[in-house]
Image (cartoon, rainbow, N blue to C red; front, side, top):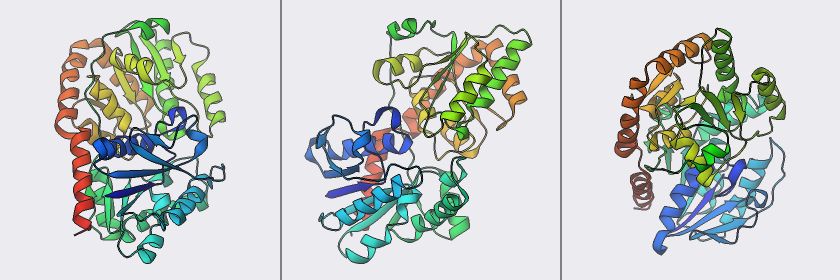
Length: 375
């Protein structure tokens, strides 16, 4: 099959990528492996520095856009849609509810091409959007289930939402991860950390990730006189420099709080593998890939109790009340005083990824959706 993917920034996008880019890279490269399918990913050149026209077997199609927060994704998706009309694709797969608003165009003009949308998250709940942008993203949720031949939801929470709000059944295929084992700790040492003596949070520095809640809880525990492991943040701002400034202000120059910026490859793998606990205080998600990635290293996880986080954790880890600094304090203190509970959770994390969130199975299920809509 000839498959086009629209809506992502690209693949291997480094610090500027997010969950959609990680998902598309995992699916696209596996679909293209061994020449099984011809996969084309529409990309924005700014995020694909020094990348060629083919990456890990995937054909890259570079198109321009307007690099403005409210326009970048939709302008690029529109140009990609126009280009795809002449691509002789069997499948056009939109990623995200914003790009899904354009899925009607190939649906009308391409009678032999099947249209798929993956509903990754309810983006309108992210704090960065204006009122009009939130309204448009809500329209995108409706479009995601109405315009394509099939809609894929990455979580049961989204699947149920689509059924109850829009009266449509969508297909559940989650995000995924691959089990990993890392023994080296050279990067951990280089960052001035000790294995199993730091808490970790990874993600873009944006308000809905709840990083300020974690900092406030950590600082409150220290002010109460508790000895704590270091707190490590990995990630870069995304149109949120003011938020990053606020986080550093809340940290108050605490030498035990580390902002390491964007990390990838060996350094990121070591940080995951040697943390004592991964903490994910996000208030809005689809199905959080970073939680699955942490679990793939056998890392115990502590997440805010929004349904999407609980679904990803799958009873393998621990939770606290969303946005509740006091409850996060209590849960952190309890887990740090009971390390045997963290050790028990490590095995549960790996087993959960193996059973429910393995990328190879997810790609097979996605491929089956393609085959089903074509027959």
